[in-house]
Length: 221
Image 1: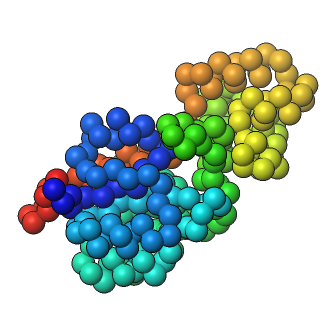
Image 2 (image 1 turned 45 degrees about the horizontal axis):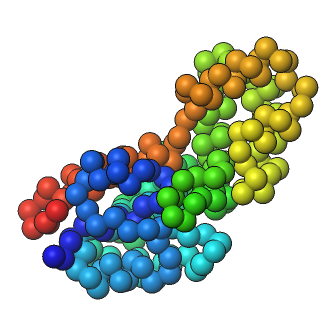
């Protein structure tokens, strides 16, 4: 049966959890041409969360504009979706979430902020996106777990790493003895219980927004 809601999702949110939030045709991270194909398949709402960056051609602006011209609602959030929404929101694409806002406002500018490597079979993240690292460090600083110097040091280390090498273990290890041992132990404990996954949070918000649109007359889940 033709499905009128198509969501491109990968490592930003576990597919099973996503399926509990929204009845949709969930497809792997989008590459060039996938948005156009979804529109041709009859999608009325396309939610772009994850997309490829380096291993294949990324989603093109023209195909998104083509879908919008055909009357398809296109939502973007979290990762590639946030990037494209920040670039195309004045032309009809709808952005959702904090990462979209940061790109829209020019606070984030690089694709590197949301890039990561993941298992192509399970979509399990194998590295940590820089935006999640930044948000976690700010949360740890606000909670009094890290001082400003320690947070700034860890952030600088994370920024200096190539995105496939960004893991919390590497970031913390590269800090060496420059952060007091007690502070580092407390921060490692904080990571276990309170690390911020902003990409996941924004993906959830995008699915909830998609669900709102799906409840409008004329859309079939």
